[in-house]
Length: 266
Image (cartoon, rainbow, N blue to C red; front, side, top):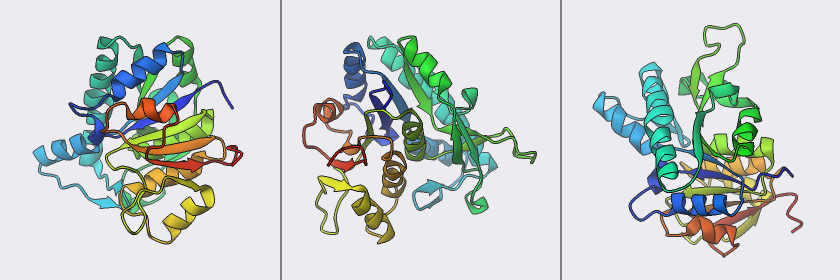
C-alpha cells in the first residue's frame, strides 16, 4: 500500500446545491488525508452537445465520441468543470490543483473499439505528477481526458475521451490507495428486486456484470472496482447526493455498496 488514502470519483450529477462532497474533501484534507479526485461531467457535456445540435449516444455506459464531440468533451472537462471545481475547493479553504490525464501523460491510452470513436482505453498510468502535487500539500483534481500513445499513427498524441469511472479505477490500481470511492446518483448497486447490496466480494462483482444484472452507467463503475481491487483494500459506491456521504463512508458507516478487495482480509 502507498501512503495515499483515497481516490474519489465524483460524478457530475452528484454536485448540486445540497451536496457536501467538496466540504467533506476539504475537511479530510485538513485532517491529513492524501486524496486524488477524479471528476466526471457527463450531464454538462450533453448540454453543450445539445447547443451544437449533437445527440449523445451511449454503448454500455460509454459515450460514443466523434471528432466534434471530442472537442466538446475536452473543453468541458479540462476547462469548464475542472476549473470550477478547483476554484470552489480553494475558495472554501482547501488546496487543489487541476490537471487532466493529458498533462504529464498521466493517462496514456489507445482506441480499442473504433465504433466508439475517440474513446480511450488506459494502457499506462504515470503517477509522478499526482505524487508531486500531493507532496506539495495540494489535492489533484483530475479530468478524465487521456492522451493517445505515440504509436506512429495519425492518432499519436491526440486527446482521448476516457470514462471517468474507468480513469479512477486505473489511477487507483497504480497508486494503491487505502480505498476507492465512487460518488454517484443512486443509493448503491441494486439487486434484481431494487434493493441495495451492502457488501460483495470480487467474485460476486464479476458475476453481476457477466450475468447482465448490472446495466448502463454502473457497468464501468463496477468494472473500475474490479480493476483496482487487486491493489486496493476496498471500494465503495455511494449516493453522493446525500449530505456528508463521503465523510460517513470514510468513517465506515454502512452506506451504499462496499466491494471487498483481495487485501481486505475478509
